[in-house]
Amino acid sequence: MGEMSPYQVVRRPVITEKSNIATAYNQYTFEVARQANKTQIREAVEHIFKVDVVEVRVINMGPKYGRWGRRRVKRSPAWKKAIVTIAPDQRIELFEGV
Image 1 (cartoon, rainbow, N blue to C red):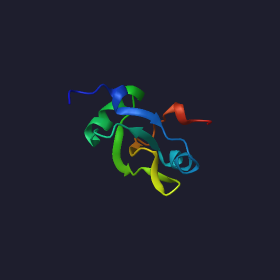
Image 2: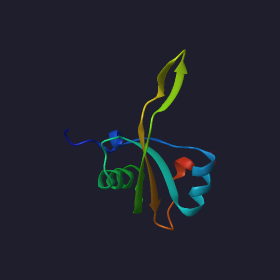
Image 3: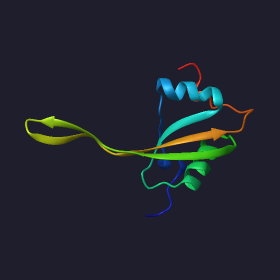
Image 4: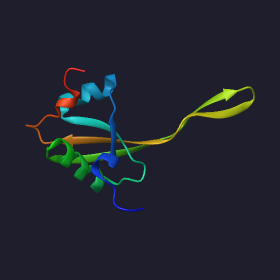
């Protein structure tokens, strides 16, 4: 796999009740590429949003399954989530007022 651009690493923000509460603590949640590592995520967020990243935590989210008759079918694919903590005096405006 070649070098990924920052926009390939960070897919989209994850906007949920829990992630909105975390913004008060300068933590922002993103869906990221499954093969991306913490270093790539840090560099991508710093490049895209022009902020200083303090900490990156990643979680591999498993697929969700449903049933179709007797079969188990995959309803949503597996994905990777990153919780990024930025410097205390900074903000990512994308999340504000959502």
